[in-house]
Length: 102
View 1: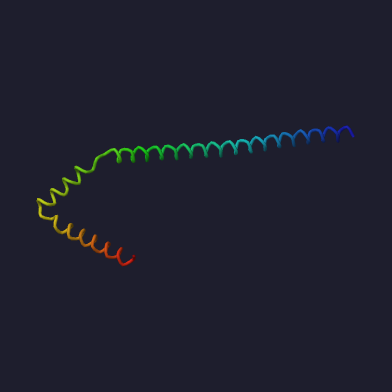
View 2: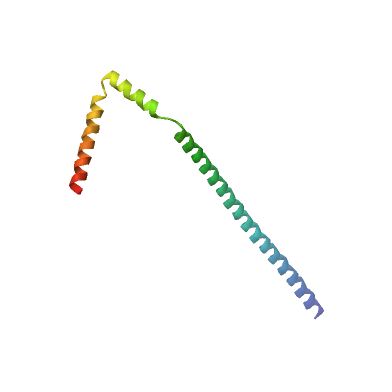
């Protein structure tokens, strides 16, 4: 009878040890997934900040002198009339389409 009680006590101790190991592994996996989630969130925030910086730099830059220079060079080379005709045609076509839809 005493032997059975000792074996039972040993088995219970082993079970508790295994349960504590399982709990440890579960906690470890939960912690690992939480760390991974946090790292992914950090990467997302860094990407967002990079995009904001890029957008800020674009909005800060003045493109008007560049556009005027391109138009001036096109006019000097004699290539400005064709795009202007296409632009006028598009304006005319869209205004007519708008009038007919009303």
